[in-house]
Image (cartoon, rainbow, N blue to C red; front, top):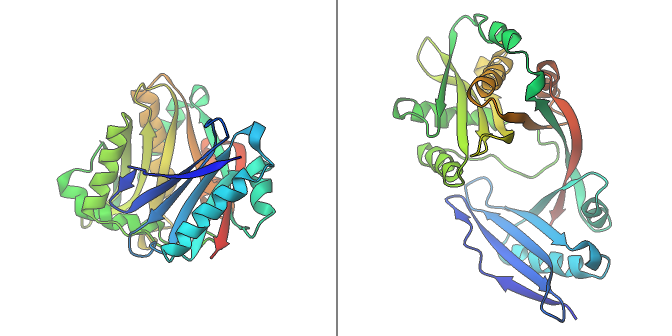
Length: 292
């Protein structure tokens, strides 16, 4: 006998909250779990993001289906129209979702840049090339007050990021959300590093690239996103900013092993940038979606 128990989850952010369920066997041992993040920001309040895990020894016994049913029922009660879940290609989760009413709506390629292979001199030459009308600026942690409004506005650069058929919706950013996101990273003990390209004509931010470094400065750091506002595209700013992010990581954190990034397969422009900068593909994931 397996018992599914709804749990109270304290994981809340200004733009989402999370529901949770635990599956336990007749001996009260945990054998699976489900987490459902409910987005609340305008433009995404139709969406739930699902994570289902079942212990390998307990798979193919119906536990995953029961956890999925619990999450789907909760999503319907909250009037959500879409559930999304990301799984590694050819994994147990891939096969589980493919056998149900989920459909693949986005494919992502993950890649890694080994820091031992980074050519610092080549990066310095690349980032030192002039980009007329623009300059680079960097900061650690929360955005400086004098750039906060412009930085929040620059997040719109991600609105047209290729998402294929995913019903993800645009994210809404303001200064409070930008600062709250940086504070959450700091509370986890990690370090947020941001590179921006600034339009020298009016001092506004034309694009950004973010990198999160582990608190112990070891292992792999994670790129959180690189984007350029539409009116500033075509000047090579994305590659410029990402190269500077790599250069700063190499200088500031010599014990880092690598940098991780993930890109939609349909985002051929950013994938080309990653290839030119030396990132090597590691694996692919599928985003599945259930229309409810």
